[in-house]
Figure 1 (cartoon, rainbow, N blue to C red):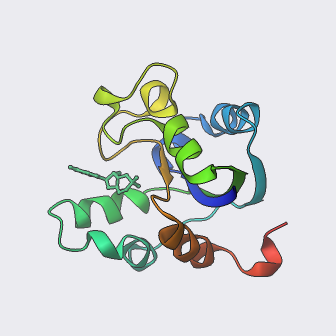
Figure 2 (tube, rainbow, N blue to C red; figure 1 turned 180 degrees about the vertical axis):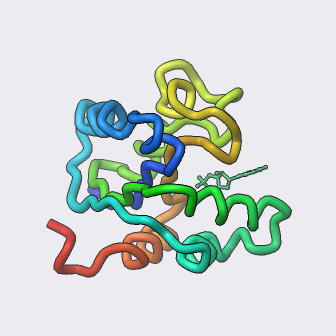
Length: 138
Ligand code: CMP
């Protein structure tokens, strides 16, 4: 089933100049990039996006990290796209990420982990609409 997911190239990856290499991996894996933009989030933008994590001890630090520089949210589409993107990202903790995954190659910690991906169809719908209007998705 063709499925859309929300991906973010996070500020750590953008600032180290890894956005191009990550986008190349995304294209080589067969995803269609339906939307993409470079943005700088405020703390409140990040807090709204990560609202489900508000009770977690790392919430404030995560929101601060996401505002430290520009990031690139994208809408990706592929067959079984949500799981396919999670597989390409690798585990949240780069120490546990498999060889060949983006996080294994580009992440430096469980927080500064290079990329984000939606974890289910409901969260993908919320996350895509958080960053993109229907007119921005091609
Ligand atoms: P992401 O896939 O964007 O979803 C939530 C984010 O919170 C996650 O990637 C990490 O950047 C961050 N995160 C998850 N667990 C921890 C943790 N234990 N400590 C710090 N940050 C975390």
